[in-house]
Image (tube, rainbow, N blue to C red; front, side, top):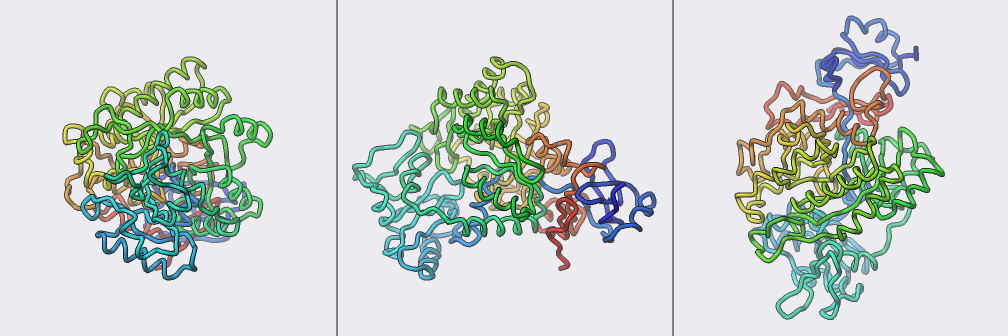
Length: 531
């Protein structure tokens, strides 16, 4: 037996292991769990431990896995202009003005994550911010990342004018005279991004360090990163230098499946700290930007059913190629039309290539027609969802889709009842990274504006334990790592979190305020809070 390096006793442990859900003590040897048991049974091992922690009755759970986020952008956002909670045009403009004053002339202003629903739904325009940013190009995202606002200087640098043609799968928003307002949606965003300076290696390394510290303080021990090849190089630098304190499953663009196939064949899929093999694609846009693909039109835009950011033929070709190579496919779909399209493609590809454990994923799966819900379980498709989005969208979704379609929104309960695997994440930077806020959202469905104290579409609420499973065991399953992590079981990786309070003993409304006392990754303490 390995020497016991850490023992935690006098705890209330939710193990995540269906064979033994509750325990009191855990012993760790190196990076693995050696034993999980009662205090009495574990006493001999605990006495041998190099470090022993008395949990004082606090709740211990498996380390949280965030099954969908954008790690480096999340880290960078922590130092960029923040507009997420701006509640008026005046506040929106003032924050940008104040941020611009701290930057050297010519520096880009990025980040933002504004939410126009907070000030009544009026979309911002370039003329709001031009007067306060005459010498700084601006590109600030809406919080969902599917729409952003550029000022006139940024539009000029990008060569965007009334003569600029529309981009397939995107929209250049124009005024009545045909002039761009500064708003760009989905694929049109590329017109701005191609002229923006790329962050250097030092900035990206720092973003990773900042992100890892932030996530450790929230109890996140593993992530599924939706990103790029350049992101992967940042992670590889950190892994080679022994700087990773967070386990990363790094997905790259679905269109690059042939490159990833070659990479896996030449270098393998990585290790327990950094793994590859996943591919992320897109079917549609977002609800807030009115670019999610729906079967019916938006109620507030009767001529608009959203858009597909890739043609169905192209999407199916990429998915088929990736599946043929044995790679892991995950595709973004928000609207019910996009979800149905993707389920159809998955079904055809699986039938064509034969049975195997492929674990196709739909990222977000936010709006599902009733007849499509049971198809997830039947086809073995994982619903990779972000519950915080539900209590955010629930403030205004009825204006977009109408009361008669709300039943289709964020079908957590329906998916579980049908036998589907539900894996939870945050979509950070788009939403807060805290798993506890996500658990609160799934359990209560109380919208951020307080308008639904009993829950928005309350029949889709799930239990605390179901939410914990979605953030631990099921998220590990969603990356083919259920044998390594996701439960506190002897032999698995020693990734765990100690919470200040027992989530099972407090009102659900109190969950977001619970503090993370201790985060352990691979048997090493990466966050400790004494406050």
